[in-house]
Amino acid sequence: MAAHSALKSKSSECRVLGELSALLEDVAVREITDHERFELRITNEVYTSIDLIDQTDLCVYVADPFDPRSILGVTRIDDQEFVQTVETSFRSCWEQATPITSIDDSGN
View 1 (tube, helix red, strand yellow):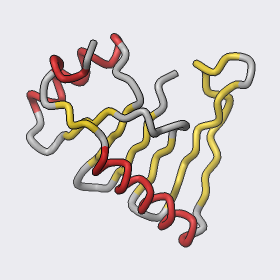
View 2 (tube, rainbow, N blue to C red; view 1 turned 90 degrees about the vertical axis):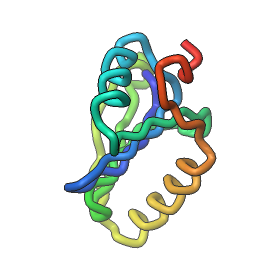
View 3 (cartoon, rainbow, N blue to C red; view 1 turned 180 degrees about the vertical axis):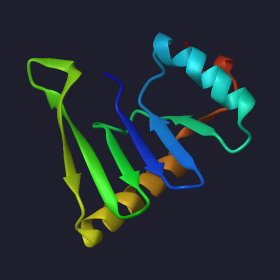
């Protein structure tokens, strides 16, 4: 399972991936070329999958301990102080991640 982090709002989405799987390559190519506001970056600093929605809710994906490629469940966190801490960490990771502007940048 590729770890990812995402910030979602009504107007945009940012996503950082730990790796770009073959399954995601087609989607990535389409998004990169079809949507001018779509950004994709790759980093090895993401260890779990999260979604931060409208800066108010954090969803943390829990890997199945017997099959780390599968998701066992999702935990929703709405503690605003913790959500802000995660968002700040995400933004730092985002700035340091490698931008992907074409599929050739992905290393696959």
